[in-house]
Image 1 (cartoon, rainbow, N blue to C red):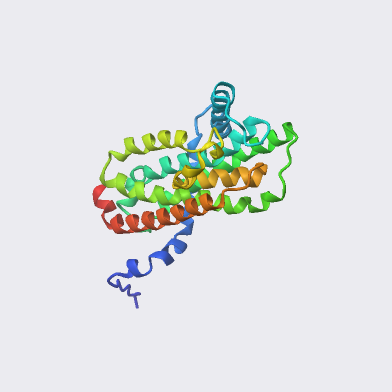
Image 2 (cartoon, one colour):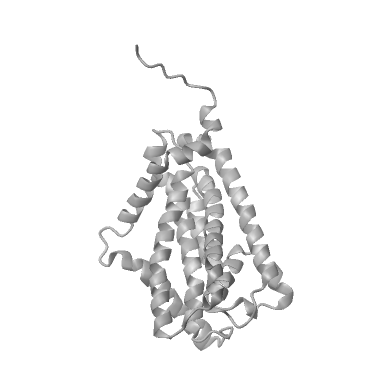
Length: 274
């Protein structure tokens, strides 16, 4: 007797989060494919993951340290402070840019097969995180070069890595959903990333911000993440501005909620819009 398949109304909706686990192999395939393709047919391959943050560090060091003469927050040398700030920012900007275009890039798959669409942008963020791990090798090399050893603060480093992942996923899901319907966001997202680079404390310490503006400045979620990276890895001379970190973490949680909410609300129409 042939097996009978019963299709229940709303099954996919009720089992959505369970389906994410059941389709984990697809997640691995998409992430590994993007890692393999990212630097395919390039001359220096994965070295681009090292060169990008390194060149950003060099430019910002010259501009903010040599020309603007900004303080290094007690961290010597200045390039080390800048590079630590560059690491989470590069992860954020790469993840946001790649994830926002991920559904459009996988339009053939989305229009033909059912699976939780959330897998696609998350896989793009994971690929950006792989670049982040590669870039950490430069930081280790720089610490050896400058004979700089992290202190006990490094125990808190994983917390700020998780915060960086959350700060990337939340806006990525939101912009991914919007980009499917409004292709203007292919232009808007790179502009936001470029603007955010200069209003985030990547090339300078957030301690130069006047005290009365620090809390407001921390509404930028990357402020708390970058400050946390520097505090945990470099042990900055000044204490971590905990109210600012708390505000940044709260904004990250809000963006995560908004991102998932927006994505789930529009997910059913993706196949029709792409």
